[in-house]
Length: 452
Image (cartoon, rainbow, N blue to C red):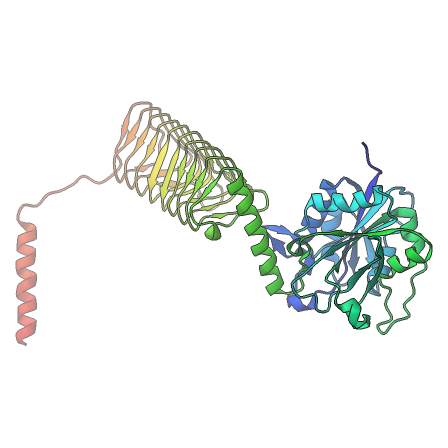
């Protein structure tokens, strides 16, 4: 059954002073994505066709990020509370007729299915729906007070709650949904008659009830509504997200040898039957196909790893790295903007940058793709079945033909034809008896120094 049109208002106007950072708080990342982007993505995933980001004059970077993401920025200046912040979206949503949800740019862990349940409460007849949670220590959280019939009667701040109300464990997350016209009509009735002189969004529930409208509380796990106000909170949000993602991966058929040591990014794609050893870090933009093995202490970012590949240990795949089926990248090998064809191998101590390595080619230990001339990056092409000897330097742009070989220690500056051997090193000279004479002379010098 189709739902009403949806919009999202994302509050991002706070100063975030406890972060102690020049960067605006909502732009700090969790799993490689800013918290603002998490909220914008949540709005998109939840079906919001219009998104408004409320920003403060102190953080124009928030405005810029919102516009770049296709959202409408709305300025709150001066800051006068959450109710006033939501009011700033009225102009952007003036012609909108549907359901509106208020989200926060410092709460990055809420799931789309949780938002869906908030909207479902509106579809079920509520005029206002509030997302609540039951923490281990309710402390100073505002309490959601329900009636005996299960309706939400009021949101009461802890400082103003009675002893009986403080016994309530259901607390306010701040997330709230309402029909657009009802939302802005009730907001117009909110006053700042309180100690701080601010307009509180929480007053909306009381105003709705006074008009005979129904309000409902929707419950979510505490971990989902974790708000970030400090670097400690940021680390806790990161840890919670990583724990969730690891569980999802293992439930989907991925083997994690030591789960707590694996770090995922927000867009990491790992298929079933992938094995990931301890201490592996995935930066943004990584896909690993079924049957691959990522060995310990490897770092991958912007890379595609096909099925049957083996990466590491101690390997680094940088943006643009593509490993075709069965390719192998071993210890202390770095790959950047390069493709290794099916079954190709680079097992030890090599740098492969700006290159294309053909199927079943072998890159010997210590090989360097010399891709940068001080001004431009140049490409190296290694043909199918080629064999690159250890400690070869391939000075780009250069092509090594199919089935060709380079001798160990060769510096290749010219193209090598198919099935040819390239040699580019000084001729070896052997001096019979020289080592024995050298040792004898050095030992005599050392013995003389001891006597002196």
